Image (cartoon, rainbow, N blue to C red; front, side):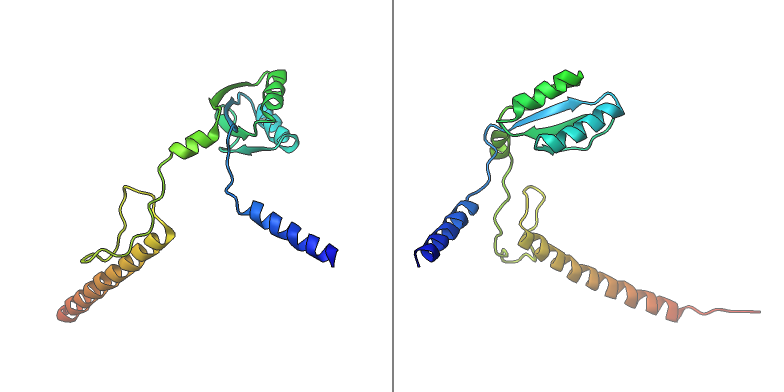
Length: 163
C-alpha cells in the first residue's frame, strides 16, 4: 500500500514539473562561421556529443546559428577554438530574446459587421487563421460561382459559323 501511494505521489510530482513552461535562461546563441565543408561536418558531429540546437542549416561559406545550454557553452567554444572555427556570440541569454519577441494576439470573437478577425499586424492563433480560411473559402466559392455563371452565359451566347 505504501509503495502504491509513493508511486502515485511520484507520478503527480512528475506531472507538476512537466506542466511548467520551458525557459532558456542563460542559454547562449552563437553564429558559427563555416569556411569549409569539413567545418560543417565537424559542427554536425560535435552536435552528437554536445547537446545543441541548430537554429539554421549547416552550409559551407555561411553562418550557422547554434544554441547551447549554459553548462555546455564553455565546452562548445573550446571545441570550436581547438579546430580553428571562428564564431561570435549572438546572445548570452536566449530567454531575453524570446521575452522581447512579439506575442501572439489572443483569439478574439468576430467583430460585428466583419466576416473574420485576420490582420497582418499580429501573430495569429490557429482559430483566427481557420476562421479567416473559412471566410476565404466562402468568398472564393461566391467568386467562382459568379465567374462560372458568367462564362456559361458567355459561351451560350456565342455561335460558331462554319463555311
